[in-house]
Length: 460
Image 1 (cartoon, helix red, strand yellow):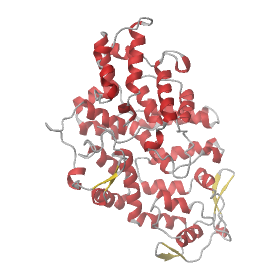
Image 2: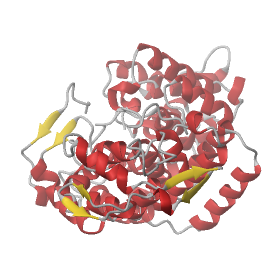
Image 3: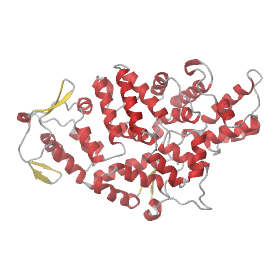
Image 4: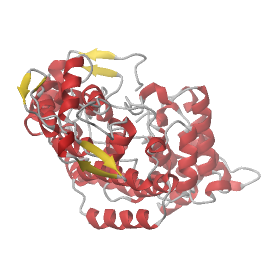
């Protein structure tokens, strides 16, 4: 299955069927390919043991574990937060620690959704220039990543890092500052063409009185405009919290978020018809429960259909961690953060207020070569990543020692046997033979590199 060449609107689907829970049958069996698909979307890939456990558990129980893991996630996050704080005051350090957390987390869906919101509520640390504020910003995203969008939106609107990044860190009565409210409407909630310039001006008045002083948020009552405002058809003596309420009352806000979640979890190659996502939009607009809509998507017939299968281009983070996670290792995340920057994804530094464009923007002639080079460095057994990832060792841990058996394991681990490229004939298990200079170890590394640079592995 391949990602289509251009976005199309999906019109023919029955919403009731699409969002009903997937129940495997002879035509749509629960198999290794679908288990791998689930772990690519709801995590950063899976080790072999997780894939096998998923086959035993079935789709719904596997989704249960991804949504609500049995491990003590709170203790894990608290420990990592303490370690991040103690590690020093650099953005580079934060990037390394976040990658380490993504690799080690017992709750990968939480980190996946934190990364999702990091692009939606984009803040660039290069402009903020204060590590503490960026650390707090991402912690805010993580705390609500699978909770209430209402609470998340309210928190972001009062986040010093966000206000500094947007230039909204001083909002005086005499000169209302619209640097926050414009992206608040355009990128975060109702979306383009669903508000007027007058709405922006009036909302900016409602936010007057808020300042960031010495890295902290402060409200100065005398600087607040207490006059009547008119925002999106509503009139009143509105303050900042009223703007948030009014934006959340707009159906367009729920639709904006659901469409973005659809792109992240279902497909970025097909724009969903309004009728298809209407049930999710209506449900989400009632309570803005992020976990509920994510759960519906991950359990759905649509998610496990060809419409979703490999219909997203992996981001650089997803591509790299898909290799690291599959082999169950740990690498230098300081080095990895630097390499990911060369691929176009710098954590704590989305390029614009609208985050990363994603999709086909991740791939061009330069970044594709750099992905291949990164894959080579991760697997080669020396250099910046040392011998932390060894596909032959991973195969041996699961009882595979003969070349053909090892090759089959590598194919199933990374691609779940899904091999459709033109290069597939050269990557059959029987083609693997010991390298004359380095033996089976070198041959397996080269074979694994060939596998993870195939088009299939670049698609989620």
